[in-house]
Each structure stands twice: as C-alpha cells, then as structure tokens.
Length: 133
Image (cartoon, rainbow, N blue to C red; front, top):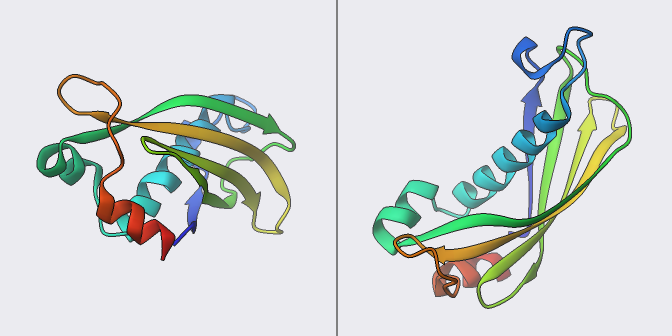
C-alpha cells in the first residue's frame, strides 16, 4: 500500500482566533496520516520501537499552503509513499477539504534510525516488502 487517506475534522484547538488552522496544524495532520498509513500496514510506532528497535524521524519537510482550512472543516489527508532508500522513506502529502479543494501539499522525508543510538538503520525487510505490495 503506497497511498493512505485519513479523514480529519478541524477542532477549535487547531485554529487561531479567526477560526483558521495554524500553519503548524498541517504538520500534525501530515504526521497523523503517515502514522495511520503505517498502522494500516500492520505496524504501530510503539511496536517498531519496542520490538524491532527502530524509530522514524523527519529529516526534511516542505509545505505549500494554498487555501486555509477552517474550524469544523472535514478534511482528507493523503500520505503517499513515493521513494524509499535503504534507511529512508519519501512521502507526498496533501490536505483537501470536503469539496475536494487542495488546501496544502507537502513532501516529507523520514529516516529510519536505531531506537537506542539514533543512527541510520535500514528499513525492516518485512515493512519494505509490504510497502511494495
């Protein structure tokens, strides 16, 4: 599975006094979609850390803000795995409103690191295989 969509509603805590989502809110929405993508593949962040000994850390993030998301909006957050390296994953991400309008798009690169020493570590083989399926 290379693509995952996560439905998200905008809550008051996500917004400023004008009811517009803070710029950092989009980063949290992107993170949630990547985490749920991983869960849909059969992994949790906790299981990977405790049982496999790996963590994922963001090493590069680019976001283009196009239109504002607002209080009570229903959003769809896309996480699409596009590139993999031995120890990294690249994602294209988008946030759209219920009308399908593109609100934000981004590219995120995460590194797979050892949970103890934080040094780069190859992606677990079974995870790489599930991503390819």
